[in-house]
Length: 251
Image (cartoon, rainbow, N blue to C red; front, top):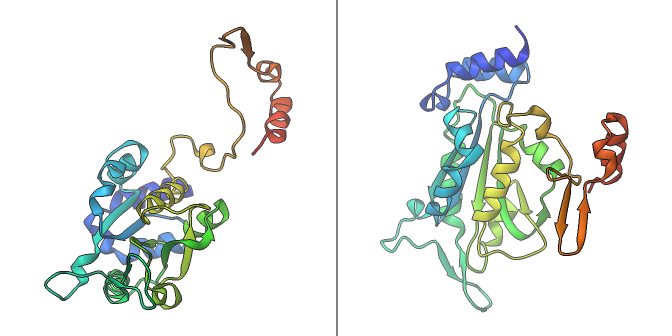
């Protein structure tokens, strides 16, 4: 039996609930290097933001096929006061509020403790912040080697720095700009990592393809007085020359 067939057999033996875990299946899959199931855990104060993202397109199909799971965790669940407070004023003054360290620590610890004792931990905790290292494909490929990724989504003026220093394994930004929170960043990371899970893409070659210009019909498109043509090399049928052209125009 080939690795792909074996991977399919193992996945077929797992149910959504069983991912808490049937250790023997996961153990042998990990031993032979088959990523069986990727768990994404998202800590947020706005879990409903993810509803559309998780119910459409390839992400929805991958969840249905049990290739991945994505769970959102409402941070206020780990508060103890009656107002369910997750933020406070910044020491030193300044506008806005800062997300507190205590509920985040409790949430992360709770998610770390859901793994089976017999399974070696392959969990990575990521805090999204504009001050983090910018996400790239090298980082995404490294994350894809884990069984479980925990994403901490900041809001307001940011997150208490002790989360970055002592709780998160790494601090990541999705670009040189500032978002309202980490939820959009988490969606980008989930999609980027999920693409690398075997079976996620219809065409396995699409997992690793790099970006280059693409064209489809019509061969000639008229825009005002201009006739915009598909490059002749792409119509030549010469696959070697087409590959060279694509390599040259890679971005």
